[in-house]
Picture 1: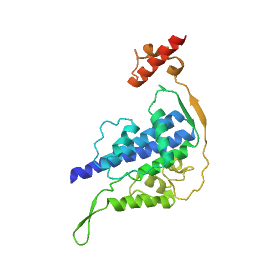
Picture 2: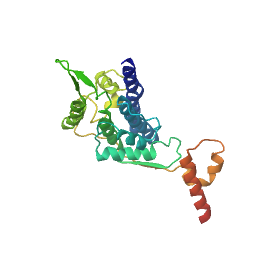
Picture 3: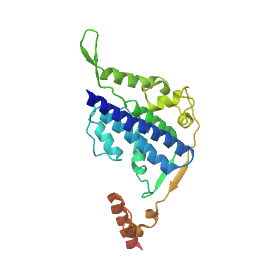
Length: 250
């Protein structure tokens, strides 16, 4: 029993609480036009929420690293479905494509209300970030599994204003409740999903911003770059092919 409690505490503190803080940092980055950082911090948040869910439910997932696609595949082993909207799935795909390249190994772009998409994705995924598959002892001494009731509560949350759904002891919930918390304004600014009031509309920047990677512009420098720094294998393979094609067409 002590081990089970300790594992759940690890899932909460190392994954969910850290994800909550990554999420707030991502909101700050977006608000101040740091879009590459927004991508990475958003990916980190979603990644850790998924890892928390998998650990709470004792799903072995030691190969995720920063691969959201792989994390999503592991969630198929859960005894329940993580209900996600099309916009959330599209946002996760966007993060999978651009979020993991922290050193501008790949070109990226951002367009549209990505902050709202992040808020919605976090709210939808995070609802499952607690112990929801457990047994409760009834007054007659019998044990009742509570998973179905917990899932029903999660699904019913879509019928009410999003900010009404709360996780007991959650970092975001504590931040919202503490009016003096230094991170509170960053969390609730133009946020329709986390806060204390119902927001039917929000006003956020919807930028069109794109950046070309140095290797995209000059793939021929790849062999010199890899003499000094590490690049992921897939990046090396892609730019070697790009350099070959560029040389062939020169």
